[in-house]
Length: 291
Image (cartoon, rainbow, N blue to C red):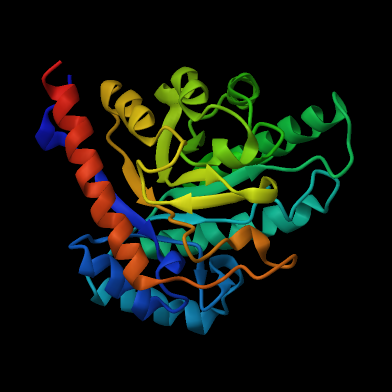
């Protein structure tokens, strides 16, 4: 059983705190943390940031003594259907391979391609083929692709995730488990996590409740119906040693870009969320330590 002193390291997706890197670093530091997950810089995805801006960002991160724990890519996400141009995803991975080397991180968040109108079994065949190519390239570059339980063929189904892992059969493909996505996507997060826990390389923490009109509202961890405590208990019981990265979604919903107002990061809300997670983690890991 884990000891209470062996709690995971805590991180945050920076643009949930502020659009610009200085605000992202300041919010993580306000929590006393030194782990940052990068998704966008001034609203621009990491792979699309121009070379000069990226170089300045990497130097600022290094000078602040902050470690980048992961980069959240657009590869296979809600904007990249299985019917789209796969060359776009391969090009992004090539850029991120170079940039992750500069940032000192190996973990890249990906998803598994919405159908784009493809029916089974064709959709699954396309995704398996693409994932094998991506994983081969990632392995050559020393990266780990962390597949999130969100958009795509394997986004909501543990059996499909296991199928994908078996088909690709590479240490460069692992699982990123998000505790809050089940509320929005209609499945029980803890039930999905149990068969996948041994493959989890990275974790996003968020919590949510149902809102009027079929929408989802996001809340502090432990205050919603996502089963955050149970998910963390499963991870603790399995000896999870990766990072827990907060993705509050209290003021920013990136998936709304192009279809609505995604909002902006909020530093105060980010810090409040981090404090709530600290308490939750202490409680859960302490309980597991005495079992």
